[in-house]
Length: 284
Image (cartoon, rainbow, N blue to C red; front, side):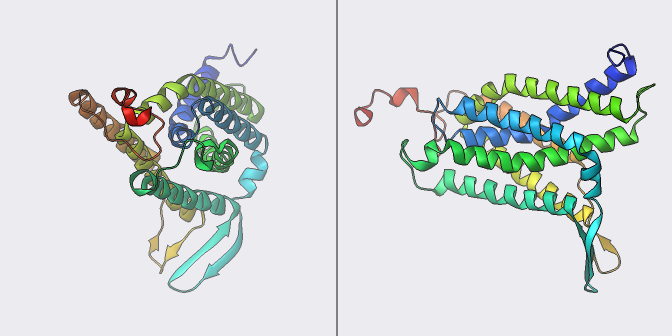
């Protein structure tokens, strides 16, 4: 109750909630792409499970802050002259997540544009368990990156008056729960919009490629990778990345508004069926 009556705590809560929602955009995009390949009745379940897993992973990591921060310590240092660095648990998790996101994004783009059509009863269309496993794996990386960012923000900011680490953790847990509630409310409409507009699907997958590159750079920075004595790998500021994402979405929304009467191209295994084709003979 003391936290709820402290104005500084409310400011911290709103700031962290907004941050978690922004950092959760890539999670919603990934959920939309993966759940879009499932049967229509399985898609809401996959989105709910995915976002609840994100909440659980984030809260678990918060309670293990000491363990999370301990992963920053290097366990293997190397120096080949032209290339040096030190591997840590944090760098490996973030770097591995970036590689997985790049692989998954490029594979999905290939599948949607040049892959073979699969029947609605096919394994890829109904693989709810496989989709949840993919969501869970990437949620670990997203949660890890989100918690590291939130911890960095809390560490660099002035803590709410009268609150120590325990109070900060309570605020961060409340922010995570609030952000997941907001994302649960908007995940359905966002997924529907993404699946109804193929250009948004490809744009979303392109965003995931950008985020994958950002994770690779961040993992390399955490591992202190250096080329020679002068070139050090730096992380990419998230603000630049999200500005590019929102600007691209704004441009695409303008394009959709100007060309809303045109028939969109159909991607492979799209769950959306053109209303004008429903009564065609070959669909009978």
